Every structure is written in structure tokens, then in C-alpha cells.
Amino acid sequence: MNVNQMQRTMSNREFLAKFAKPGMVGLAGGETLIDHVIARAQRHLDPEKKWGQWSHTFLIGEKRSDGNLWIIESDLDMHRKMIRLGAQENPVSKYHDDSFYSSLALLDFGLKDDEVTKVIAGGLELIAGRTKYSLRELIGTLIALKHPRLRNIKNPLQQPKSFYCSAFIRCLYMKAGIDIAPELDIKNTTPEDIWRSKLVREAWIIK
Image (tube, rainbow, N blue to C red):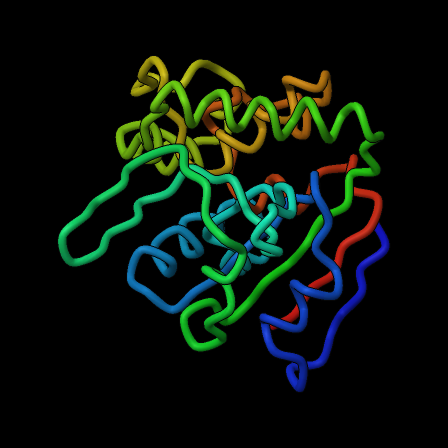
């Protein structure tokens, strides 16, 4: 994988505007408690027990008639009077806040045009089907991280029509016939597994 490291003189807004393209996978690292919990849990993937760099992942979607690039993701989105738990579409500006999302990466898997269409269409289909965010499955994956032999077998806490973020992204790519991490059960996939996928052609990172 060819990794392009950007300097922090560039903002998240500038980074995404310059490098994000439909079909790419985005990775984010943040400073909240849940970000730190997920990053720490992924230390089991590193021989030196270093924390994972990434706590969330999303798909770069299409540019719409409003001129904005949109993303597709499965997330816990909480506002004052509204909570969305699951598959959703948001403007890429959600990730413009440098203080909230202190690290970003964009992964290019070298998709062909028809594969990009299948991946994005699959995401919109899961949004329309009200696919939920699965905290239970996330807990199952965190347990499996401590016991590597469990990672390639069925997540015991899996639920139908539910995905946490990185399992959701892997599902979308599989709709185009591409398996990012074939050695793992789909619902044991972490953001760090996606970052380490052998299928990544090129990556751009800012942190």
C-alpha cells in the first residue's frame, strides 16, 4: 500500500475536498471516550500492543445536486432531539471538525466504475431498509479481539439487519464481489482491519 501523509497545516475540509472520491473508504480517529475504547481494544492486533489509529469508518458516496459530497455509514448519531442508530447518509462536512476528528484517512481500493455503483447502491439499499447499528455485535468483536481464535468464527452476539461501522463497510464491498478481510467473520471486522487490508491500492492520511 502506498501511503501519502499530509501535513496538519491542511484542514479536514481541505483534505476531504482534495482527495475524497466516490467508492473510497474513509477512516476517522477522534478524542471521545468511545473513540479511545475502540482504539485501545485494537491494540491486540499489534505485536507491540500499540493502540489502533482508527475508531470509525465510512464510505465516500456521490456528489449531489446541492454540490456537496455525501457519505454512507452506520453510526450512532445523537443530537438534542433526535437519535439515529444505524445506516445513514450525511454530508461529508460531518468530518470537517478538526478538533473532533483529529485523524482521517482515505483508502483507494481501485474500484472500477461499475463496482463503485454497486457499493454505493448497496449502501442506499441498507439505509432504505433501516439497517440498525449493533452495539451487541461491537461488544462481541471487542471480546474476540482478546481471543484471536474467535475472530474467524461467527460473532455470538450478531443480530439480523444490523451492522456497526466497519462490518457495514465490508458488507457494502462484498456487494461488489470484493472482500476486504476474508480471513475474518464479517461481524468481527474492525476499522484497523480495513486499514490493514491487502487490497488497499493507495491511502491518504492526515493526523
